[in-house]
Structure formats: structure tokens, C-alpha cells
Length: 477
Image (cartoon, rainbow, N blue to C red; front, side):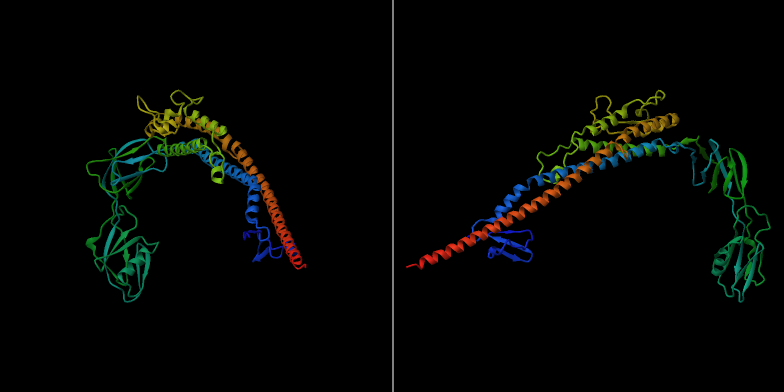
């Protein structure tokens, strides 16, 4: 007799009292035991259900392929939208906003900056004296009682027994004080005017009735102005920051120049070569990534007769005509002359953007064969220096054309969005069909289980009746 059994997917019901001995229950799982027939009912039902489930399994694999296609299209759409944003940045008016650079031949001696427009040219600056503050030095004695010290008409209160450091901190922490204080040599305090420049001989007037401060008069030092010249014209400043020596330029005097002047150069107003190069480089990098991603999808060969989701998701966009057409149009635009532009500035190659095609007998690189872009930054910088308005017009014209081309495909509501929505609809529809098929398969399996259970019950009853009859016959005289 066969002892094989079949799980009934958690069913615990029997098909009648006649099945006693053929249905056993363990937890929530009932089993059919083929004791009466000797048949391997588990294997029979499993094989029948395996055959019946082929259409459902095939549709599930197909659904995985459509889902993979939807995901790949969504990824490409995001990549192309980022690329479109890069192209839009090339047409931004702020990208070509003009500014001036200001450079010093020796910033350690003279630093030069400009926040507005400045007079164009080169300037020879010499510094013979730096501005500094007036100073007076005092011996400090801690007062035995509270003291009120008046400096330049402003009074600072000092508590009794204040240390020299407490006195210094009180002065420096007073926003209305006219001096800074520094403790030197243990008991010495140096007071320095908070403003630099020549204040004359009447500087840092101190009144101290409590006698905490005793001046060392020999160390008094009068403040002085900075003395310098620009292109031979002498000038002075109470501060080492000079804003009126060169129109629009702020000079910070850090040291004496001696006999060798420092050259300060102010460039003509021009767009930032660095910012434009960064924007172009960003576009090229994202363009090459997009081209590579599209090429990968177009050339990935699908697997014949896929049997799982991984196989079904391979090569779903192989030789896709829509993507292939877009890729061709994108490449063509990189070489095409743009209409309405002057000669010598109508093609991207005029500003150093190309596929890096070889010259002479050199073999082409794999990137040039694939149509990937490269940038000759020197050529772009030269073009910006010689014809910045031409570069701007070229990039703006290209940007507008490129955004139109790629936007029709990848922008929200474009061709790619429709394809993604169609794929999503197919996935949903297939999911509904799979649910119906799974429900039908479950019903079919339950019917088979019931039929085989009834079969075993009937055979058992028949065998019991036969045994009874044979017993009765054996007892006949």
C-alpha cells in the first residue's frame, strides 16, 4: 500500500463520514492518504495543478517584463530631464553676467578687491608707512577700593582688588570704550586707540583719581596715517584699508613695498569663464551618461523564452525605435550648424565641444565612436575672451533647440510619460488577470482534492463490503 499523502492547503474539512481513515488532521493541514487505492494522490494532484498553472506562470513572467520596461523608461526619463535642466542653465542670463577681476602681484603686501565696477587697467602702488594707533603704557596697581577710570571722557568702573587681567577684560568688553587694553610684562597695561591714524599729540587722555594707573610717559606713541602712492601720486589714509585710491577698488595695506611697487590689475568687465566652463562641463557629463544609458538599453538583447522575472526584464527596450530616433537626433544636433548665428560661432565645435574625433591617421577612440562629448577648455576660454556675446548666442540657441527636442520626449506629459503610463496600465491589467487565474486554480485544486478523497472513501467502503461478504461465504456449509 502507498503511504504518500497530499497537503490540502490548510483545509481541515472532510467530504463525508465515509472518508474516515483517509483524512487525517495535524494542526490546520488535512491530508489524503492513499491507503485504499494504493495511488500516489499527492503526486497526481501536484502534476495536474502544475500543468494547469502554466498559463498563470507565463502571464506572471510577462508581467515582470512589462514592469521592468516601465522602470527602465522611468529611469531614462529622469536622466533626460536632468540633462534638459543642464541645457536650460546654458541659456540662463545670469550665467553671462559680467564681472571684473582684481589681482595684486603681491597680496601679502597689498590685497585688492572689488565689489562693484572698477576702473580698468594696471596700477603701481607703493607703501612707505602703515597706519597704526596711538598708544600709552601704564603700570597697573590693583585698587584697594572701587575705582572709576575716565579715558577720553568715557568712564569705566573697576571693582576693588581687580587684577590686571580683570581690568583689561573690563576695558575690552566695553563697547563704548575708545581704547583696547593689553596686559604686558606682568604689571604693565598698554592702551591703544581703537581707531588708527594720526590723532595729534592730544591722544588717550586718562583720569584716574584712585591711582590704579601710573603712566610710563617715555613709552607714549602718537598714531600715524598710512602713506602710499598710486602711479606716483602720493596719498595718505588714517586706515590701512583704502577705498578711494583706485576707483571701485579696496586696497588692504599689509606691509611696506620698499622700492618695488606692487601692481594692481583690474580686468575689463566679462562673464566668468570658470562659471561657464562648469555649466558646459556639467551638461557634457550628463549628456554622456544619458547617451550611455540609452545605448545600453538599445543593445541589450532579450532572452528567448524567459522563465523568470530576471530573464523577462532583460532587453525590454532592445532596438526601441522611439529611443533610437531620439539618440540619433541628439547626436545630429551636436554636429549641426545653428541657424541665425554669425560665421565662426554657429557650431559647438567653435567653442571646443566635440566628440574628440581624431586628426590625421590616429585611430578613433571608443568614446568618439559612441558619440560622447569632450570639452577643450582652452578653446572655450579663448572664445569667451574674443567673442563672449557670440558664445552666449550660440549656447542659448543650442539650449533652446535641445530643450525642445528632448523635452518632447522626456518632459512631463511627453511621449515617454505616455509610454510609462501605458506600461503601468498593462501591469495592472495583468495583475488582475493573474488574481482571477490564481483563484480559479485554487478552486480547481480543492475540487481535485475532494474527488480523490471521495475516491478513497468509496474504495475503502467497497473493500470493507467485499471482506464482509467473503467472510460470510466462508462460513457457509
